[in-house]
Every structure is written in structure tokens, then in C-alpha cells.
Length: 142
Image (cartoon, rainbow, N blue to C red; front, side, top):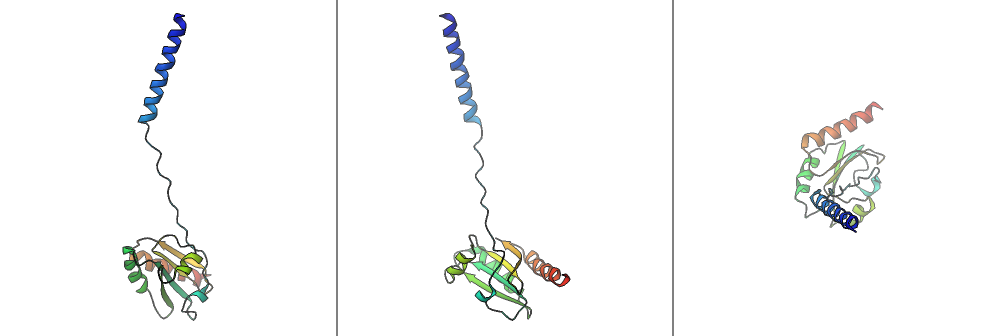
């Protein structure tokens, strides 16, 4: 009988130690959200059909970062590069069609609608403009 009591005591102690260790272990990190960017756009959905390049900014009126990215992207507009802003409230169907789930999303699209560069969230003007230039350079080289 004495051995049974000792065995039960050991089981209780091990259970308490396991519970304490479980409580002290940090919680798992939250799952990271991955946002999608379209790989192809139908250029007929946007203006500037006559231009080789199009920069499209998917935005929302409630997004404070969006206005900054629109200003940077609009500054890249040239006679060869068009710009179009697609605001969620005004053009929700295009956001849904292309699976835009985060704003601002800025894409650089060639004449055939292939997305050559994309930018999610806040980016510097230098990164944005360099991305547009490198996409154009790569296309010219091929």
C-alpha cells in the first residue's frame, strides 16, 4: 500500500510540474497574413490602351497611406506610362475581380496586361520609380 501512495504522489508531482511548464511556455505567434497581387490584368478594364505601360494603384478612401502612394505613382506618369487609380468605394468590382485584399496595392503592367512589378503598402518614391524603370528595361532587353 505504501508503494501505491508513493506512486500516486509521484504522478501528482509530475502532473503539477507539467502544468507549470505549459503555462510558462510562450504562446504561438499569430499566423502571418499573406496578401495577393494579381499577375495579369485585362487592359480593357483600364484607360490608356494606347500606352505600353500602365501603373495601377488600388486604393481606398479610408486608407491614409493610399494618398501618399497615389501621389508617388502619379508622378511616374509620362507619355509612355499611364496611371490609373482604382478606389474601392468607386470601383469595388475591379478590386474583387483582381482579388485585391490590401491597399494600397500598386502594379506596373505591360501592354499585354502582365504585372511586371508590384508594391504592397507604403513604399518610397525611389523604390517605386526604380521598379517601373527596371520593368521597362527588362522588357526592352527581351
